[in-house]
Length: 118
Image 1 (cartoon, one colour):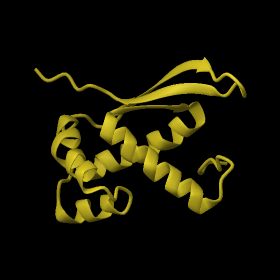
Image 2: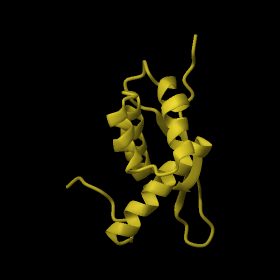
Image 3: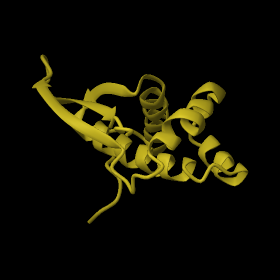
């Protein structure tokens, strides 16, 4: 059975958490979180970058539903999406880290892949 992981949150809290984490990923180009959250954020981020590659008013309005910060939206459309214009997908990577002290949750870094321009 596919679908979305619940992340021990109500649906509204989960949606808000994912929106915030995607925004932070685009702002800093890498975030540190748990592996489970990283996988969920990765799915959302990949879809938003693909949509931003269209660079139309319609695409901007759709992406604005998930990224409310105007500066981050601007960065996504002007810097991040053009970087991956030729790339058909796989804009992010998850690097697994050490288990977290305390509860032992697997940590990971989720980062945008650097596109090598020739």
